[in-house]
Image (cartoon, rainbow, N blue to C red; front, side):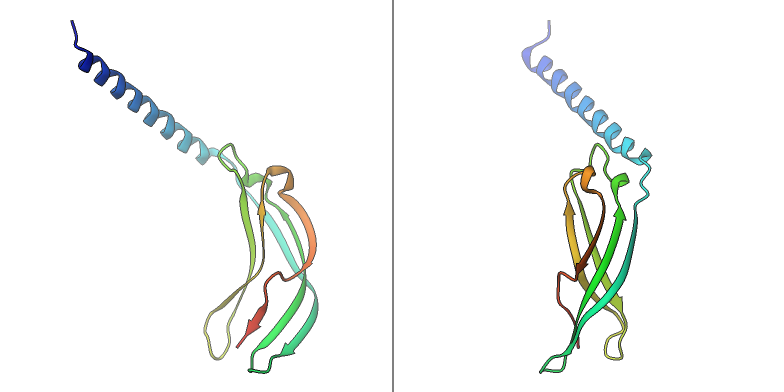
Length: 126
């Protein structure tokens, strides 16, 4: 009847086609998830405002961060990286961006939180 090579080719072709179909369904199913994260950040206090010896300014802030990121977790999400960045304009630079705080959220149970923290990274301006 059919040779071994012909049967192996038919099996491989069917397997690859089925795998591609399953991958397409998995990718398409993620489009229907309703993702509506919310976050609110307030500056509670300016802890320290200091001029450094070489001319830069350094600020330490206390932040109140509340977020509900649970809707970001679907069957395909293992973890979420969240961060707070300050973006501002000065006379020397038209766009300045500084990362103030970040966190890796490992699962859906930890995705709804409210914390008060100081900035994790130094906020220095020229």
